[in-house]
Amino acid sequence: MNWKKKLTLGTASLMALSLLSETAHAEGNDVTAEAEPIETTFLEISQDPILKMPSEYPSQFKYDSGVDIEYPADGVKGIFVTGYSAAGEKMNSLVDMLNNTALNAMVVDVKDDHGNMMMPLDSDIDLINESTQEVIDPKKLMDTMQENDIYPIARIVVFKDSKLAEDRPDLSFKTSNGEVWKNRRGESFVNPYEREVWEYNVEVAKQAAKLGFKDIQFDYVRFPEGFENRDEELSYSRGEYAESDLDNVKQRVDAVTEFVAYAKSELQAYDVDVSVDIFGYAATQEETPGIGQNFSRISANVDVISSMIYPSHWGVGSLGIAKPDLEPYQLVSNYMEYENDVLGALGEDAPKSRPWLQDFTASYLGSGFYKNYGAREVEDQIRALNEHGVNEFLLWNAGNNYSEGAQYNFE
Image (cartoon, rainbow, N blue to C red; front, side):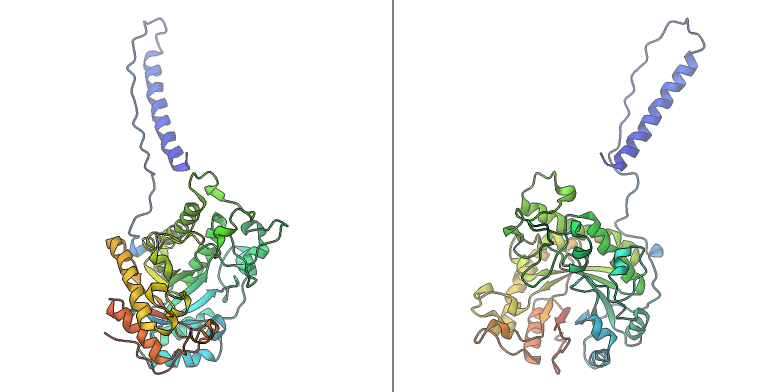
């Protein structure tokens, strides 16, 4: 029984005791009087919580960061910016790029792929402060965003977190020899079953919102890739899911989905949109067995869904295309048929679609399987989105070197 039900039961119990007390007091003066039969009264106990978060948080009670940047009238069209780019000379050229094109937003690393905070956050959690690298001056960043009318999105990498895994191995996955597990790239993940991990990342999100970010974008909201092949080998806690009757796949899906729902609820008071990055292939199947992503369930709990549909990330023959990286327009077009079906089924619960697009060359695919990406390939992807009713997008280039001369608006 949860505390809310206990509180309701306690209130009912007090009412019952009060009724019995009044009866005893009224009839207790004459102990020799013949006892009269007492009619049994049944109290109906409500199972609903006494306090409940409203579905629409009153705007007058939302946190005001003081940063006034409106949502772009023609939709978010953004680029990814690392913490080091945001704090260095590179930022000047990126700002110029946005000022001279239809691009209007930046996704800035607040918590990066290693688990480092890229700017000081006013948090009471020691581990957050210990993992902070004061690379970015947040006030200077927000001043730049406001002066240039750039919509600021905070990227927070959630469950891929080598730093937290090292500091708190109990929140991660361990091998048979007791060491924290690492993938082939030497990266560690923290455990999506652990509520403390949820709270840690949502605290980062709250502090980012206080700084003035208008959208909190959660990335790596999943278990490690291929986790279905090692879920019974590694040592880790299942937290509140330990007693679940569901199989491992369903448990992982529940943990990931419920983290997203928790984050959305916790951030209601901060006047931000909540978005999640998700593998594009998740939209083409009911759920991903290893990583725990269910496209439909995650989408129903966010304001924005950002599917990563880079042509280079699809295998040979995917979506009916022999070599996906060679056909950016067709790949995106074919993918959107799946996504629109899934989001359409959600009706009013459907979030805004804002996919990640490829602005990099995937030479690692090998000769004959990749092409050099530039303005034309970027335009092809955007045009395919627009033809399927989506006018928002984000461009990914890990080094923040974006193609020049691309057309970003096809409306």
